Length: 497
Image (cartoon, rainbow, N blue to C red):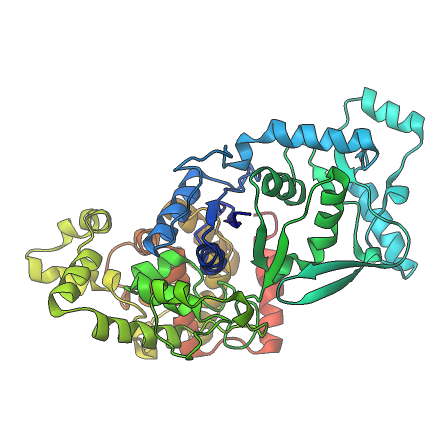
């Protein structure tokens, strides 16, 4: 048997360090066994998936040195490797389950589903809905079908009490209550598959032998086990990796820690160091050394050495490790070459030049005006935020509301950013010029610089968000009580946005 592993990211935003973490362990396991590593794109979310995001995923994983044997860009015998191009395959398999009596057509409306769940909760039961909960009289089904009402295809799940046993490579036997397992949608009303159907079908057809994924998917394992049984297929070996955590042990999220691979690339981290650090997330070398290369990791890799305690992604520790790589692995010539490639990246520079060319008289004017584009966190003190129309509490509130606004932005461009800030300023009763002042200082260290919207568009979401949070922390984030009050105000301001 040839070992085959895979990573299946969704192209709905910036490439996440969690994706790289899971990809690294899939690749290491495949190489340990002389196997193959496949990259598949989960782009069934037609609203949020973009080609630009897909390309960023491919570029960032390659920057880290994570190469795949089959994928949408390199091809292979099991393509296509984009789920959006495999729709007919999923529909055929969904209908096969309907014909076998293992799935059913459901015409229930969202309102009816909410009422059914509320009734379940009120009765003190699980909110997971079963086929018996969802069935309609035959004449009502026919009426809705004739009226062309939307429908989904759901899987049949056990209705009796009991536990499903799932075997896991790291955790042994996991028991999960069937009562918590709902009649999962397999095919949505737009004809696109859900994660559950698409991944089971793709993993089988692409001959995946080991599914190494995050532990957030443990609760879905009973559904996947059922689908394999319904189709009569062998189930791959499951291995659920521990999730990356913030230093406070909460789940890694962009609200507390930059999560985009692009952020670490733009901040000037070496890809070797970031990959090294991700390799230490829950795993260690036999001799416990902290610094090691990809090839050294692969040579000593044993997935049984993975610890199930939540690995902490600490940016300070990553910076320390990156410093070791810079000092110990690069000659002066190599350091200069890498620094030049990072600082004088033509594509990045050409975004900046049009903003500064008309504002300088000589090249020595460039660094004071645009140096913040090549910096990490800006050195700030409260005096830089002094403004005739804003008190300290105004600045704190503007920074917090702006931080929430930036966290929620899906499309990162200056027009969208300005529209969001303008709506907030109007709702909070500030002139837009006054509202933007703290953002100028947070992003650039001064208000005497290029447009803050242009600057944030170029810096990207993670660096921009991190700098605004950095400025907010200077003044002190809201207390728990104050934070709840502000959250209500913010929700009211942005309702319907």
